[in-house]
Image (cartoon, rainbow, N blue to C red; front, side, top):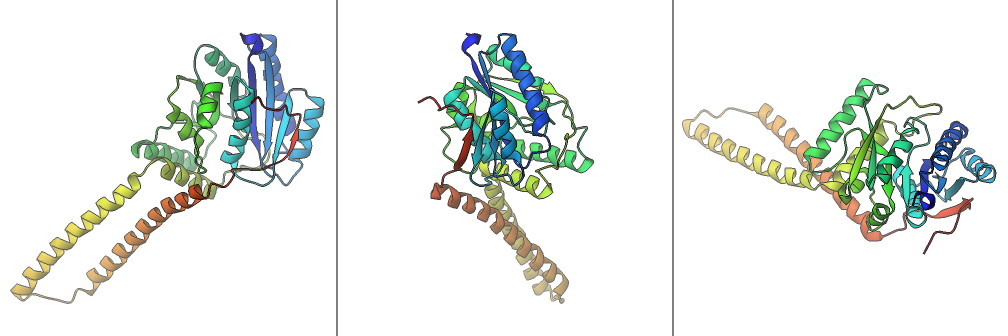
Length: 321
């Protein structure tokens, strides 16, 4: 059966010209090893250019002409990492028996792909690449990530700790994932929600080889907000609970005011009034912001706009019907 198994390594790219030569060399080496060991019958590296402004697509097109295993999709516009990854997985769902998703920056250990394939051949439909530790992260980033995973699990989201988007998925999990209609993508939560048999491969994450990170703090916070609001409505429930708490506090304040008035001990309370107005006003604005985030997601979903458009392809085969 391994002689006919097709594996695709999906690599979303955005301005990655500085690393693509080495990325192609390392991934090609892994594909060649899997082929020579008879673990797969065909291996492909699919680069998805997410509207890069540098020579990324030029390099991908060149690799597709010199490396039989390399192909590429050039998206017509920058649509974001998750949408670009979806574009590659959507093609892989029709072509491959399994797909591995990995970033182009070589921070994830490409050698772990061999272990992922072994776990897949052993019966796992989803194989998560999980960091052993976050030694390469700053103190702030490490603790922000820890807080995010804890918050996601506390809000009911099923995400694997220290797992990003480095994973292997079998054909049936890919096709199940393609059945999700939403445009607000948080793939690490969506994949976990599929529920198919899974395994984990642990690895040590490396420093970025070259170039700059495509996830500054603003994007990290935006991504975390997308993850929370895509997989939990508990923030809305917390707003209701907070509103109930303020009602109870106001009832206590009313009783206290009446008692003080009856006893004739009324005094000017502008300080407490000022603090209360500012606090409650800030809480209301925060609540409206959370509600607005959900309304905005509904707005995006009901428009049903295409996730992406493909401008060019390189070294591609037509997907199976």
